[in-house]
Length: 413
Image (cartoon, rainbow, N blue to C red; front, side):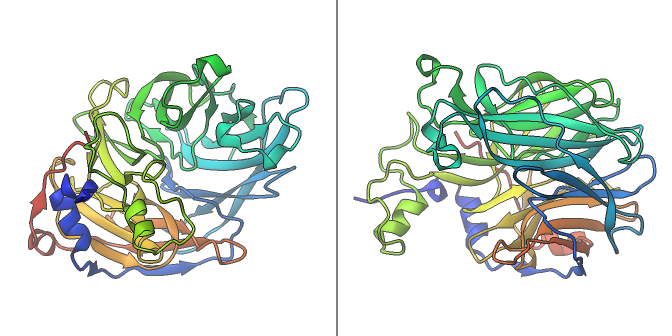
């Protein structure tokens, strides 16, 4: 029986994925800042200062670290630290882990950090099978500082709706021109009680939260759709909000019966001995898609696939001439950073895929006034400790991008 994968339904993306990637230069900035976990980067609209984040004391007494650069990303140092300021845990709950998932600034230059804590109510704590455990829970909240990190306060816990598990691994804040703030957080479908657990139980979605008071309070305004997470948002001059998302899902009703996962094919080819040989349970998609909202984030278009297999955790950067750059990380050829380009606000994207380096994960990028792009990543997990890594680079000339043409991404449905 012939098997089909995502590549049979997104032919242009698959062709680009298989094509030789074009090496593109970047200037590396080495730092000694650690512990670094999936950093994001933002640029102050007030001073132009760059901010990113790390952590120390991850478990019992975690502390957020805010790093900054005042010389356009050439050098970095610690600006301040913040305690967790976590909401109360129910009696008997055991903390499993805490993370600081993203950073932001407001139009008043207030610092924001998104926080997440996972805990388990069972006696065996971190050894619980948390994905199938109804006592498992994630909490998410925001801490803020209006005095460059000298003092901090926290928001109320973010509203999780019918689910208890809300919290993303990458969550950069988006500042809109009108001063509002948006924050996407992944909600996983474990509900308050066993009889309310959804079917199927494994399809998460990114909830979108909005703040109108400089990050003090947050309201849930919508969802970015099933199977979305690790989202990044960019407001366009038209007020459309363009977004990237890590689109990842398993088999769902309506999938062609002969469609299988790349992961399952690799198992059948003997690349992963000992893994299950049944196709169920493997991801059919695990890549980057783009989507948009024309009503401030309350409703969203169907995600459209733009990258190949294991090309995920992307962000959006808009240059002064309107060019949109989509840097993303990859996990199929080691680890590293690549990018594609759009000249029509995300409607079409370059067939050319440019490669920045083969080092590090979870790219997050901003553009400076002269269109230099500063990208931050974590060093590979086998580096101990995991450190903060920086690239500075500029995009290729338009003629070089146009040589291989453009494609219009298709909806994942």
